[in-house]
Each structure stands twice: as C-alpha cells, then as structure tokens.
Image 1 (spheres, rainbow, N blue to C red):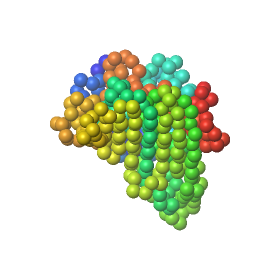
Image 2: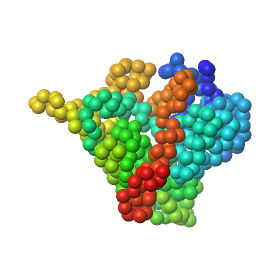
Image 3: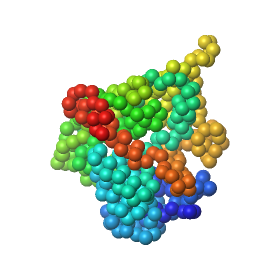
Image 4: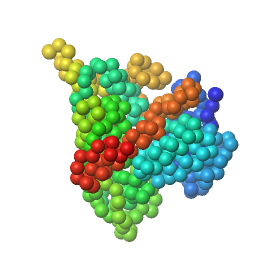
Length: 387
C-alpha cells in the first residue's frame, strides 16, 4: 500500500486544517503512505468549489452519500458539525471505508458506542481527532510520565480558556446549539482536556461538576465560518442551548486528583489550553499558546538551582521534529494535524488501529456525560454508572 484515497466531509475550519495536513505530509514525511485528496464534500456548491480549488482536492460532492458510495475512496474524513458524525460514520463503515472523525465523536455516548461497534464490525481503521496530543512538547510530557521521571502522579490540573463569544451580540453559531453541537465549551474544549488527561495520567474514576450559560439568547447568524460569524445586533434572537463554561473535579483510577475548566468567557485568553502535572519527583507544565515549550521541574536537582526549566521541544530528540526545521526553529498549530495524519498513515502501513481511535472517543464521551449527570443531579458520579 503506497497511497490512501481520501474523501472529506467538511470544508471550513477543520476542513482547511485537515487539507493542509494531507498536502504537507508527503513533503515532510516522505516515507509515509501518501494520502490522495480525491474528493471534498459540502452542501453549498459555491463555497465548496472555492474550497476545492484552494485546498487542492481533485473533485467535489454535494451529497455525502454519493461520496461514501464512490469506489475510488478508501478513507472518509468527517469534520462536519457534530450532529452529522454518526450517520456518515455508520454509512461509511457499512461501505467498508476507513474512518477519521473529529471530536467529539458524537452527540451522545450511545451514538458514539454505535459508531465504535459499526467500525469494529466492518473491520476498518478508525481514528478520532484529538490533535493536541501530537505537539512534540506534549509527547515529551508523556515520555517523562511513562518513564517515571516525575514519580507517582498526584495532581492533574487543566484549563481551556477562550473569549471569542464574550460579546453578548456575537451571533448564534451552530456551536451554541445543543441539537447540532451536543454541548458547548464542555464538549468542544473540555473534550480535549479529558483526552489529554487520559493520555498522560490514566482513566477517570468519578467526577463532579458545575456549568453556566451566561448569555441566554443571541442574534441569529447570517453567515458563519469556523469560530467567526456575521450578524446584526438587531436581528431576531435565538436561544443558546449549551454551556458557556463548565468546571469539574475528578479522581483518577490511580488515585490522582484532577481539575478541569473549559470556558469561552475568559477575557484576554484566545486559546489557553494548559495543563500541569505534579508528581512525587517533579512537575511539568504546558500551555498551547507556547506550544513548543515544556516547563519541567525535578525535586532531585541541587537545592541552589531548583526551579522550573524551560525545555524547547524542537530538537531531533523530540517527537516528529527531525522531519521539520533545525533546532530552535518552532512549529505551530497546523503541524499537530500533520503529525496526526502521519500517525494515521503509519497505522495503515503497520496494519493496526491508529491512536487515538473510536475507543478513545467513547471513553471521552463517558466522562463528558458523567459530568453532565453530575451537574444535573448535583452529586459525584462514577464513570462505571455509564457502563
């Protein structure tokens, strides 16, 4: 196998990120299986054609069912809004297509489990899009934890802070509608924190949370793309049906404690996706706004030089970096997607499931829904309750 023929559903924010990754992979990872950009799919013919030309796809479809039925497609990439994930994935799996789906995997835990079951029954490869795992500094954090360099983990604390909807007249985009998005900051931002915690620390045992929707109604949007939208403050208003902010605590199965905060109302924070891990032998800190750096502290350093050190994760010794630039030459957000696609293509080459896959998507959904149940019932909720 020297190529994978890709059909992609979605052509806006994530569609651009995925397209860029498919195009960049052969240049920087020449030994990888080559993704062939066969067809892009979307509902608006004019916008779709513009994206097809701009992103470099061979052809287009305005009906995802036609895309799934095509014989010249091996992999279906799903980055449409969350309410479309399940239907597309089930049809694609039934057609024997491999699957790459953005997070959250589905609107509900039940739906995500159906998607996993369908993929396993079809015997296809399946991957879920948790791209932040693939920052080299995060990969270094994973190595330090796995190698025992910071000892027994006691704490994982994390925040994902944004401010793009803090204006009460910002339009009612689809991400603020539960029937399309599933949830607000919790499922959009908190899902990344949950996956990061599972990746670095381990499985969740129990959770307790709280949430708030600060702006209950917003003007109906006249146009939207990614995290931007157009609308008038005088336009008819619609109800916001998701959370603006969700916070929760957890106890991990290994006994560590965790705290999580996801909000779109943190003024001055554009994309503060940050975590800190404290262990018996040291600590590590990461902030995606400085994604090339990992702050590291070891307790066995000499007393007169103890303190957090800045590790610039750009050397060939750091994951993926030998494919890019000389040491000290940093990379950015888009590179995490290239690394993600590289992992997917490596899974094809080695005939194994990629990681993270739909199992990870289901595990994340379990935690998301356990937190929602905790908020509704105002109590600690065990993850096992959702088994």
